[in-house]
Amino acid sequence: MRQTLTSVTTPRSPGLKATEGWRHWFLRNNTSGAIETVPASALFVLVGAEPHTGWLPAEIQRDDHGFVLTGSDLTSTGSGSAWPLNRAPYPLETSMPGVFAAGDVRQRSVKRVAAAVGEGSMAATQVTQYLSEPADG
Ligand SMILES: Cc1cc2nc3c(=O)[nH]c(=O)nc-3n(C[C@H](O)[C@H](O)[C@H](O)COP(=O)(O)OP(=O)(O)OC[C@H]3O[C@@H](n4cnc5c(N)ncnc54)[C@H](O)[C@@H]3O)c2cc1C
Image 1 (cartoon, rainbow, N blue to C red):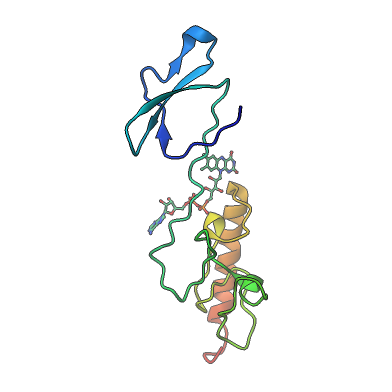
Image 2 (image 1 turned 90 degrees about the vertical axis):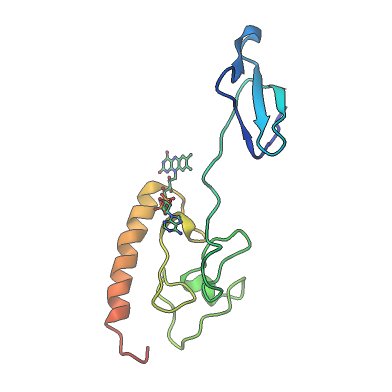
């Protein structure tokens, strides 16, 4: 049986009931505090996939999940539409000209370390290009 649960922890002791061939997990619901015994041969943990971008100003466009739109996604007919300048945005530029996003926080990014590092150096180059533009953009 496959089941997706959110907001649960495995209490440290005992997190796993070993007496039945390691097939029962004790999971604590973080909202109610209730502990549930779940029959399962494996437990997959998915954490860290939620962007914390709620603090950004409205001028920086995000998708429905909070990921920041950049580059051509701002000018496509999809969810983006708020690019304010005549020139095209740089690939990692957000809807606020001169503000760039790199790594996991960016919509459509690869969500891997190597990609985030590469995008960081790309963003630095694009900032340099942006700063060498004439002031009227
Ligand atoms: C459980 C897990 C396992 C993973 N395993 C792999 C793997 O095996 N291989 C792989 O390549 N990738 C893996 N990844 C993905 C990888 O961790 C990310 O792709 C990478 O860390 C993205 O780097 P980033 O700099 O974009 O974001 P992050 O590493 O998330 O860095 C963002 C930083 O910004 C900080 N921050 C957030 N909000 C603010 C704020 N308002 N002010 C100041 N700082 C703020 C955060 O605290 C964080 O330190 C894994 C991710 C997770 C969650």
